Image (cartoon, rainbow, N blue to C red):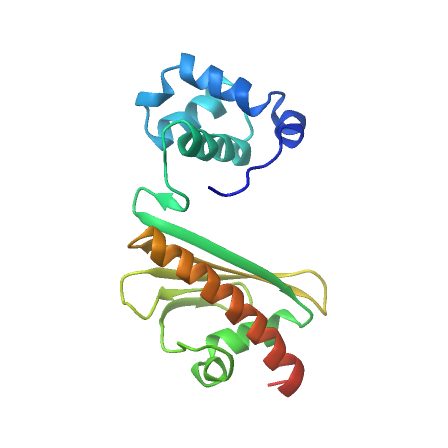
Length: 182
């Protein structure tokens, strides 16, 4: 199980600790609710902010209902992010160009279905089934946060493998950009 956000943070942001939320959800019948119903209950009935209603729902599902790490209704999902000391256009080009991907990525031949310049890239991973998405967030003119998310992953073990793969790949992207300046 992934390390959860601490009680102090959840208390500061929602007004309750994890155990208090789990008790409230148990009394509301959340063991028989699906993900959407729990999140809506928290948001509408308990006035929990949207991001936190998702966090509390996922934590409840993992700890009380036995949901596996990275599990969604359509398979498994992972994401990795890295803030890189380069402009958004440089990083976007390194991801969107097959030629440039071959320099830093072991499996560069995924299919891009939609790209919005310097904002996002969507497509299918090399297995043809897993969705892949890149989001680009410029921090200033010299830094950009790159977020890679994959969903519809077939298994928990594949999700863990892909999480490690992308951690290594993002480090390699930074290294290659630093050395070659492509």
